[in-house]
Image (cartoon, rainbow, N blue to C red):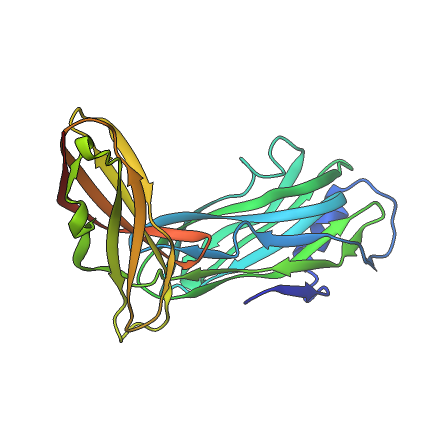
Length: 297
């Protein structure tokens, strides 16, 4: 799901209520609903991407909550696309090192859910300043496709007295990276730049590449090429091309200016494609080797 979704206590967890009643030392009081700004549950990234077999972590963050007593969070996902391998509930999360009781701590891949419900004990409360992880889920990509990473059935309890806190919820989304490829393994230098001469005062050349996306692609995506250049003496430098949007059926050129060292000899080029569903998330693609140019005196 995209954007913000305001959750108004969709579900009041009876397990959480019972645990709070047993474990917190607070005066008896009815539960009330509290409006506060800007309490939020959110994933640490709006979009995740990866090829089949790759791993990634999702940090479910709790932001700007004062006097936290307990919480109950479920994250759902598509099991045909992703598998939840493990979850960190209280080792590296906001409850680490605190007096607390884990009511539910489960990873259920058959149902596509990860749930964590906890309560601080002994009257302990915690202020969450900024954003801290409420749980961390480790996923592996099973096959190409998209999956919502949906925060749902979520309750935040503050106090004393205990009260359910209204909060915003921002879900994440896993997207298969676009199937952009290097067109005919085309990445090298401009034809006019394959032989450069220091005696002519030449110090620059243009690295070029072509990327493509098939007509069968479901959607477009972004791509750029990273050029790694190994000089005659083994020195490694790098140049990065411009980033382009590639729509299904399109073939698009990219380029990168490169200033080479004043050293004669053969320069080896390694071109690596990076592609992504958005401008701020890229996954490594093909790498082309065997490219080169010469610098003469």
